[in-house]
Image (cartoon, rainbow, N blue to C red; front, side, top):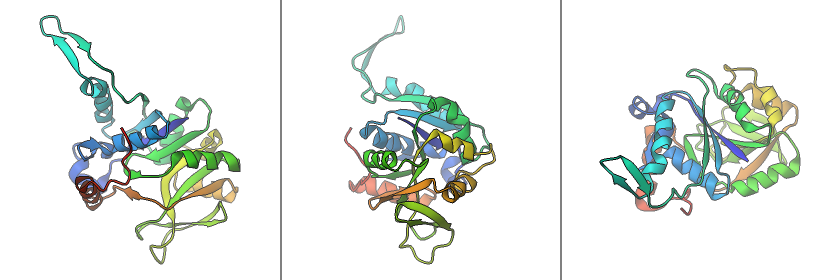
Length: 256
């Protein structure tokens, strides 16, 4: 199963960092947050990725072009320039780099990346947050209910809008929660190819019209995640993640 990771936004609330690099390349513990996200998926045996690029996408391309060479031992013959690798990169990932436009919205990026999905069930997430969601259980849940889409709901900081559901079916979104004790869209989706028809074009925000239409059609189900989840929207969020890494309290970390 392929996973789309949306990596094209400008990350304006992290302008101190994103002026020189795309948000998914901001480092936590010396590695881009995108790498942490991909490690999590690969831990659950989801190792094929479609990276939806936009703002400063060349930085992400460059990182992965160099990744295998920089993560192995090798011998180089300087006169000839010949390189002999001593081992192979342990991350057996397949990565499809897809340019989805500088100004394209989140829904538009999914639609533009759709040709790489082979008309099959796929996963989708954002390149700016980490969690310890059980992705295997998430996919199992999705396959059992038979609807077009599954959204992972998480417990939020109170500044986000809430997801309202009846049983396992999403019935509404509340944009201004009264407390921080509810649930929000955590950004880990499992989707059927039919969701692409809910996206009009480049200007479509996935989080608005497509999700609301899926709700109206009774096609959006919820998987509840009670564990760790943290986005990286602000410098404060980044400092929190760096502090967790420095102290060794790393809830999202998986085995190498």
